[in-house]
Image (cartoon, rainbow, N blue to C red; front, side, top):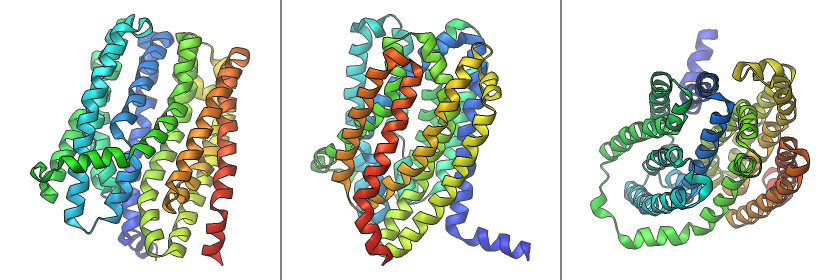
Length: 421
């Protein structure tokens, strides 16, 4: 009976995809648990803080390269997965647009790192982080998500992280080596994403020969609103550590990053879960809204229970969790962690609601909400940080997510009621 049940589960394509995707993302989430304690012990908390600020800036720059493809591209690939001609047009146009944007971003970043004093004093660290942007340019994960090819997402995830682990453990041996931390992340993504990109071209027989400049221009115009909103999302994600680094110091940035490194395992998991469920939600809502909503409710409901229980465990063992990453200021950092566990719990509600907002084609509403909430969040951080330090930053993130949940819910309430009645 049990054997038949297992076989039945594995025969379900969605369940198989979840297992394959989960394996890859599990490896992705474990990687920081392996490298961060080593980096902190070799380079020190302060240099770890420096490298974290530089990585946050690189991740922020990624938004300019993605240009909304991580949302619009996924949905277009999902909806047109059975139309080979349209699929090729979407893929080559998106990759070409990202290449144009990459050149502009690298030029701007280089000037920034040389001529702005804050960056110039550590310009080697920032310049060696530029390969991260190249890796993101050729990253085809958005396309693989759209066509639900989770096998290749898992392959490129594990490959990139293995290369990163190799680089950290074999080439980071002294404090001064912190400048190479982000370089190895970039090398890993370039190699892994390059292999995946080549595989997609071969499998689907795509060619740049059919690329039209007009399509690239149309994409840049059409995706601008979504891209603009994603700038605000990125600011919300990476502004805390940048703000702490700019207005505080690298040691405080290191403290925050240790807390974030524990929480980010679950935050990353939530966003990866969004990436897994989002294409199917979009597809099902287009075909059968009731079926799509049932799918959304089942997967996200179970996921929320898992997140809440996990945060309860982290709260109870906060001291031990922090001690694994750092040996100094453990009590102080563990108190910050106890507050920070509320962030994944609130995200476990707001991110699924975001799926419905986008799945119901309420992109403009999503953009407005995102922009307003990020501005509120930044203002809260600026006001609270001087008085309450990192506690103020964490509190602003929690308050912003709670407001977002309320706004999302009331925005889709009428559509939810129509589906269920």
